[in-house]
Image 1 (cartoon, rainbow, N blue to C red):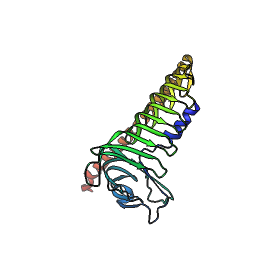
Image 2: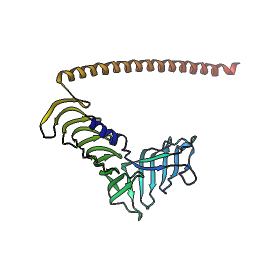
Image 3: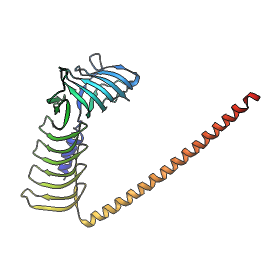
Image 4: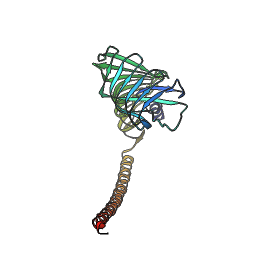
Length: 293
């Protein structure tokens, strides 16, 4: 079980920044350049050291809104961005920046250097050797893509907003393999995980862990465990009932705490509104009698 957890944590959680990434080691004259509204809010232009240029809307130091991203080969993405890994703080100087930009495939178009909507396959390469292969049809990025790591680990499957999401296959360099559903870069839903020694789990997953109904097979194909799994470990029906009862009580307590917090906040707002109204009425009376002074 620990192997499964380690595999996912070392790939889908910590490695997958499903965006186009550039790592820059200084902010000197040859580094990035920004021209635009103050504090990176509004409209602005950012030029990466490799010549890639973004022109568009910014929010709190991130590419958010409509914009155009032009690559050194002349192709450009025109559409909407829903964030980036820039997180720029103009009051600080960083010795290393991690740049990533997240393109909304549902509201954008890739245009080739001739000004036509791009058709075909395009590969984007990270500085660390990872490759992101995307298929475009009439300028639109398709959901089926491939992400490959330098050590041979590979994901082939569906993405949503540059995040692993949907049906796919993750294969590790040691021979381990997961085939199934993903959500936000994690195994989530129905799937099959096979260890390098042939041991296999078929069933439900949640947050990269065996969770729900499932069956564990040994390397010879015989069933070793069948039933309920809870966040990576096999549990009896009795234990599962106790766990679920405890979860219900916890959720009930959390709900009650949130209800009291809302009531408290509502009380504060009502009092604030009452005081504002008193000040408003007092100002009206002051203005009403001012001419007679």
